[in-house]
Image (cartoon, rainbow, N blue to C red; front, side, top):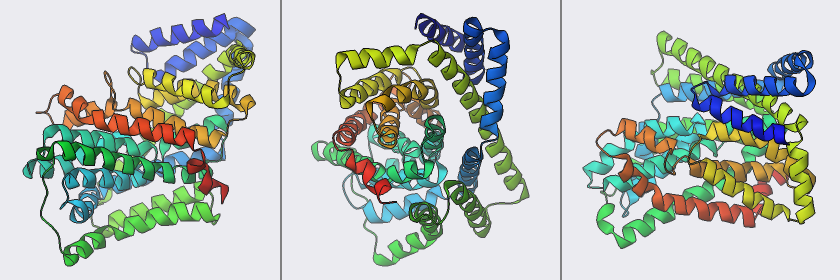
Length: 429
């Protein structure tokens, strides 16, 4: 176990020295394994793991969903999604902030990325809210918080990675994320409602829209909403596998972008290159995480934790709550992908002997990691919004996301207390 702790310490030092996470994981995992078993077995283990995982058919779901997101992004759908949400919700106090959350949820469902959602919706949603007199804290806070939906509402890249790391059914993980995603959207709506209830000036009403305007707004987004229903519905009904669904989603997104006349040849090549680069980066980090996890398991950390928990007679729920607290602390200094890759192999190995459902734990993990995206001092989504909205200080955005952090914690506690919210839909598949 001591070797494991030394390995974690060495990893943190190497990462803080500026070495990319994937290379740092590979380096420390390889050296640690070599120290325990010799350089020959370490090289053989690392090479075999990389080959095995890179030829795994299940991995193909990742680049296809990433490609789907790049095509959707280039189709410039975000404006239409926001307009559709605007005409239905804008007339309420705080309605434009609620529209932002709804649009973020819809965009997240087809992009699968929190950072992309936050960056895109900052450009789309903040200017209209400012035009109607919204307080900058509520405007930017709603965008930063709405962006977190990108890693929960399927198709979600982190859920794919979690499924690969834990060998959990990716299709069931996607379906399991639907109700928690809706719960989180409702929790964010409640946070906005309470904010404007006590401080109405922060979120004035916008003008009402008639039925014709609503129908026109829906007309511009119905195709991509149908694509989302097709992908998730096909997985849920067992018509096609997650990998097949990813291929259908990528093809549908391509046709959608072409139909909107937003995708010329250079944009097409750009989308392909972007998806390839992002996939390569993620694959490198995943390979490194598997090598590092192998070293940690060999060094006995997992066995030691399981033995300690069994000796303390802790319930599985108590252990999960403790893990969530760890995620909330780590979220202050690490980004979501680093937390996921560093901890999931260890935590999943600890929880399996305790009988914890890994689908439920996957959703709980993602929600806990989401909170880290909007908490100081890192808060990746906050700094993404700050990069786009340059005249608002990061401190103001952190103040703006505070109600959403509280709402996220309430949602997380709800999901822990009632696992059925997460497991009902997967159980019906």
